Length: 268
Image (cartoon, rainbow, N blue to C red; front, side, top):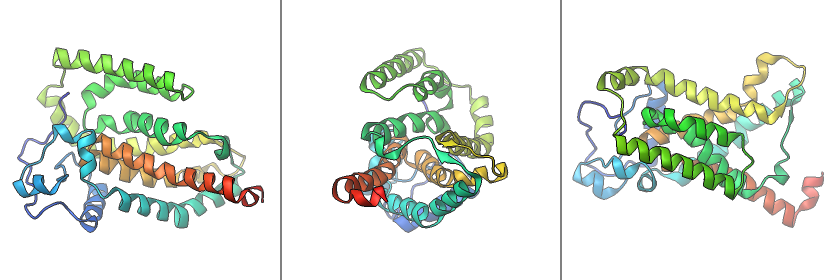
């Protein structure tokens, strides 16, 4: 399915794949002024050839670009040392309690289901708004389902059927619509990020405290959403799903380790 591209040619640096510092600088510039292009080169050979391969980069092809481990460590550090403690203190002050017991969440739910469904709902359409509008009813319905292999298979089949029909009909927006979307993209990006963050308020039983403090409860999700949105636009939906999954896997691995090797720490 076609994606939105800027009308002007995209220049790719000839000196190779960006380093992590360059990616971080690009992320900061992107957050200040979100824009649809250019993609960042995903492999040394692409950068050296001076080309940006858009089609193959959307899914698995995009995994060769970003420094995923570096971004995972940054997100873990920021959330563990800064935003997580702040959100926890706000939860205590406002009387908010978590609805879900993290000890009883499955790996399938946290590391596969949530990253795929949430990235498709909130970030797939950032570069592909035309097909995303047709896929959203199925994807939003999936958010209300109980995670399971059967549910995942049904969602995948439904989305695949819709995508096949759209591809067969050559569905795409007129160029004038695409230009308008490109102009509105900064607003769309930040609204999608805020929606992703505020969705996670559903994880809490809200108390009777100051409701003005509630946005602070989801600061970790807001900050993570900015990075995930940047990665989706720059490297593809596959890269943002992979980062989301790796980020979620960290706390799950920590809880599994404590459950099996130091259960007393959890009881305390």
